Image (cartoon, rainbow, N blue to C red; front, top):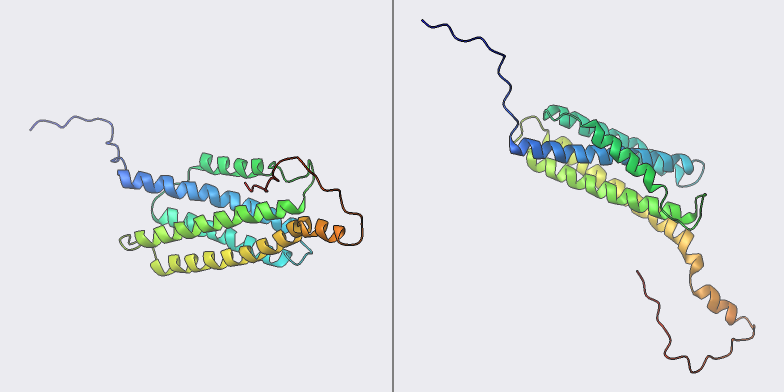
Length: 208
C-alpha cells in the first residue's frame, strides 16, 4: 500500500458568502453601537444635574447593555469582531463633535438638538438590526428569537424617550428665534419702519 504524502494540515473551508455578509453587517453595527455608547455617555455627563440628566443616564446604561448583547450574538454566530471598524466608528463620533452649532468653541443649545437627532438615527438603525436578526433567528439555532424581540421592544422605547428629549431641546433652543419676537416688538408702540418701494417682489424664506 502506498504511503499517503505528509503535508501541511488542510485549511478550514472559507466561510460562505452569506456568512461574510453577516460578518460585515454585524461589525458595521458594532462600530455604530460603540459610537453611540460614546456619544450618549458624553451627553449624560453634560446634562448631569439637569432634568434631562436621569433619562440620558438610563439610556446610556441601556445602550451599553445593547452593545454587549450584540457582542454575545456575534459570538454565538461565530462572527469575530473586526476592531479596526470599531475604532473608525469611534473616530467618526469624535469628528462629529466638530459639527458647526453656532458657537466656535463652546456648546450651544443647538448642540443638544443635533446630538439627540444623531442618537435617534442610531437607535432607529439598531431597531432595524434587531428586526433583521429576528428574521435570522427563524433558521439559526444559536439565536433566541424572544431575546431579540425584547431588544427590539427596548429600542423602540429608547426612540420614544429620545423623541421627547429632542422636542424639548428644539423648543428651548429654536422657539426664541421665532419671527413672532420681532413682530411683537413692532406692535409695542415703536415707530414702524418706512415702507420699501420699487425693490421688486419680496422674497419668501426658503428652508433647506
